[in-house]
Image 1 (tube, rainbow, N blue to C red):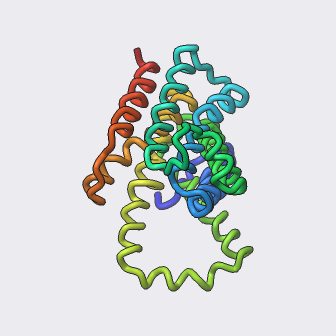
Image 2 (image 1 turned 90 degrees about the vertical axis):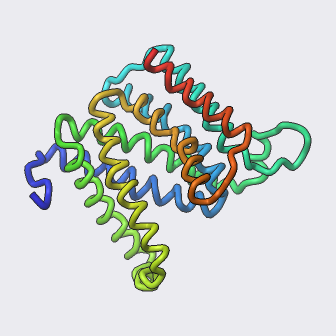
Image 3 (image 1 turned 135 degrees about the horizontal axis):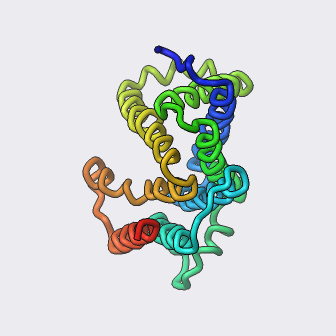
Length: 247
């Protein structure tokens, strides 16, 4: 079927809400946060998505996470934070990461990234509640349809339609965006749906928060970047944190 017409009204409703929360609110705020405070600080704040997903899953869906799982989540976030902060410029010899976040970055950017983390965490839980045993790829299609409609409304409200044709003239950008769309909204989101079918939303979100660590190999291959010591240590700590869920 070209459209998931076999989905129930329950699945259409909750997956559509998930698409609005995750794609429209979450991604829109995240991309705006990239502009205001940069990708590193934004992605650091996105590590709040796992505890948000865990709390939402506990309150909304009845998921439970063991004490070891909570520790693993915290260790994973520490490892990801080390990777994210590796290139943060140090303004003094005193280690004051928290003060730099508060003083060196606009408050509105931090709020945008926090809302993005809420959108990702809550959106994942809503997806699990709506999807149930339905096909993950069809579930992703419903979320994308909802996200497309939501962004169309945002474009209309902000008057952005007139700027859209100019973007298609940049062929290089469109190629990379198309490749990213295949790996992100198609494969990435669909496999995340499969993940939440077989485990709790908090655990799935924590594993998916390894994105800042998994960025390192493509950065080496595509951009020629060389990993630094703190990046390697951060990756090891993050992997150890995730492993606590399975030991």
